[in-house]
Length: 88
Image (cartoon, rainbow, N blue to C red):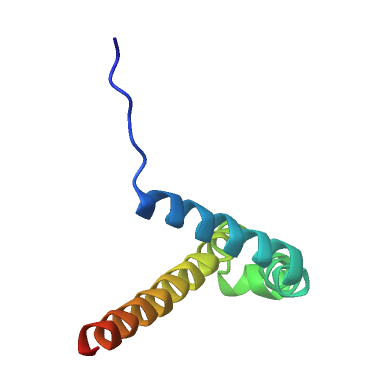
């Protein structure tokens, strides 16, 4: 028999947060994404050294800041909840 791998609750939470933040990013911030790409592809930007690859890197990594923010806020909420419960 093979051992069953258990998925930790943190991994499930991380996957849900990442998928949700990226979905929100690509659905609701299309204008911002288009603005970033247009500025990276324009002739003035190419002369100044801006690269479309850098723009795509920024577009794909900006939501990671959102993921970290959401995880930090939920951690603080859980921490405050735990402190309130411990006082009771």
